[in-house]
Length: 373
Image (cartoon, rainbow, N blue to C red; front, top):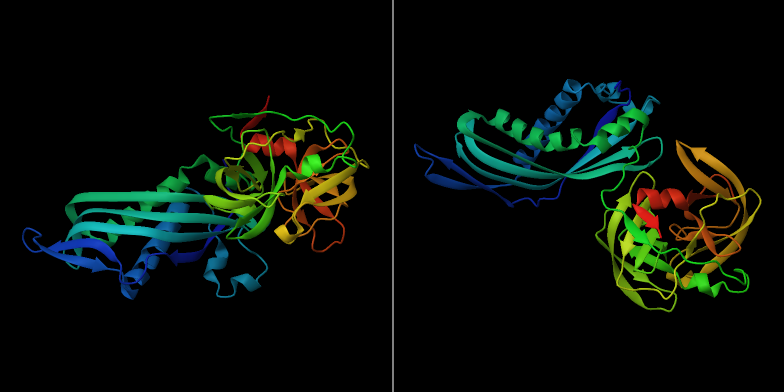
């Protein structure tokens, strides 16, 4: 595999508070003089230097091209950005070691969160938690010990097929989830959505997370809702508020950052389920977007338009429509006259009034490992 895309280590964060214990460091003949290590500014700066070095060496050793802009103080002004900007957040660091100011032995563990941001699609395309550990019975140089520790965490990322796939075509390949979830498909609205819109409105909810608000809709009758990844982010739990004003906690059980879809599980089991349309959208047909633009105060908003085009943007398929959507509509369904879901609202073009983009529902189901029964 020839790799041409570049990645730039752009962000380093430490979620460990200064003064936090990082474990014990022993000294003396039998390492009996134990001393607690506390995170301070010097250790933090040292970690940044060691980690940056190890990351660069890993990229080179594994054949990933070097981002040349790293050598310029004005890289962002040169017009040539790296394909991906990478950020690491240190979540935990612990030592049980022995030595002096030059060498050490013992064991250590580290935990990072990594996020990769695509400068082309302007969104996070990869996110993972990396756990690393290292142990040495022999005393080795302190720098070598920590390099091996950080390297063990980075090996988790570099050995992840999803991470490697990003550098082939800019996004992870479609991967089949090991366990498919079967959901019941609903039925069409016989009278049409113009007369019975409430049947669909009751299946659409407002989602609140630390990132803001968005929309979601029930799929099947086992408490599952579909939304956007950018609505829930990496949150484990979100607040879900229904059209009747009741709210509950939803657990985000599956997500795909590249296709921008997420699956939320709640304890609420709806009386009926939204129908999913398997046939493709037709250019010119009438469609309706349902969601919560600008939050739950405008929940249940329905807007009408037509299907304008079937687009492929940056290797991703979208249904384009002139139906009006706004912030908060993200994650809501796009349905046809019979109330069948065609797609999921994802964005409105900021540079063009009246243009909305929607993720085809069939692709969303595939990415989330959902099958209709």
